[in-house]
Image 1 (cartoon, rainbow, N blue to C red):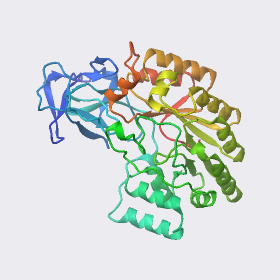
Image 2: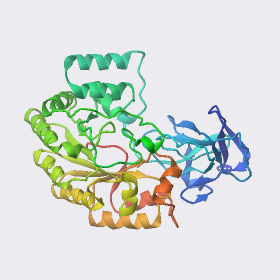
Image 3: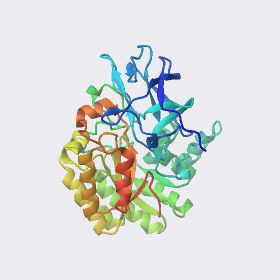
Image 4: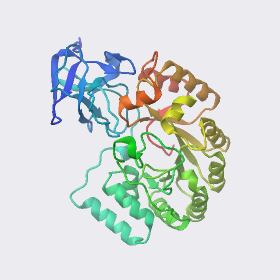
Amino acid sequence: MARKRARPTLAYADARGRYYFDDHCAALADGGIVRSPRPEELIPAPPGSVPTLLPLRRPLGGRGVEKRRHALGVLLPAGYTRLLVPAFEAEANAPTLPLFGYTFACAIDDELYVAAMRTDRDEDWEPRRFAEGELDALLERRCARDPENRMLAQLRICAGEYGCFTAQNVFLQRGEAALPVSPKCNARCVGCISEQDPEAGLPSPQRRIAVELQAEEIARVAIEHLQAVAEGIVSFGQGCEGEPLLRSHAIAAAIEKIRGTRANGTINLNTNGSRPRELARCIDAGLQAVRISLNSFREATYAAYYRPQGYGLADVLESIRIARKAGLRVSLNLLTHPGVTDDVEEVAAMERFLADRPVDMVQTRTLNIDPHRYFDLVGRPAATIGMRAAIERITELGVRVGNFTHVH
């Protein structure tokens, strides 16, 4: 007979970021409504998890928690979706948390557990380890072959400084390769990783590409990647740029140059879907796949986070319709957050949308943001069904759930 698993108890951090367990204090999680975690929401912290201190935030538990204890969050590796966030009380002078995906953690049988589920597997997204100097040598060799290419100069920063997998793929010649093209954006996402408002109180984790690249230098990077990777993917629209549809003319011209040389591989576009006409231009040029980002299927919740400039959720939905009609592989990049994604009203809106406009895949993406900041923006739910149940509702509609762009 299997031994019954012990109840989840408090995991917390000290001021130096070391974490501890308290077997006498119950663990509470935040799913929009503070509650105890359910057994089916918890798994042992997977390899690659990063425990992280939440400064000046006291964990909520089954008894009064001493001030010297700080709330603990865990950053998940790729391929996992967060189901709950840490429950904490922030002190008056607590700084806004940096842009990471804070996941609830607790202790069970003296092991660290997290509220998460595995939603995808892909060896191209497994943690990478390079020998000393190996990555630098790869970057140097590739850039030396095209020293004037400004895209490669940006990708060198992203691959070396930020550890971006799609940027590294350009130099490793594997999988999905990044093609950043746009320094401007028509949304002011609260959790944007490349451009934060000065009043946000936190720095941008990445530097956005600063130049408007021309079709020729874009195509050179893409063509070399597809020459080396038979089923490779080249993707416009990366975290180090703004909205690529603002550069649809350059993208369309680049696609034509790519296809004039290479017939293999997949040309993909990651976008906010704000400009249906510009998306149609890219489709006419030979775009094959599109991944459209959104955090919600409800207008008010969408607008609170994206803060769109000159477009609305209706334009995003129209872009999805156009892409489906044209026969593209269409994925949604769904920015998930417990208490928002699984809000009963949100789930109903999602089901209505997916029933009317089916897509090939929903890629769940843990939204990197301070949880309290996000709830302040979009509000807390009256009732939720739980993140696992919300994700299962997607699969019940016949839509694949994952985290990565796949060739098939």
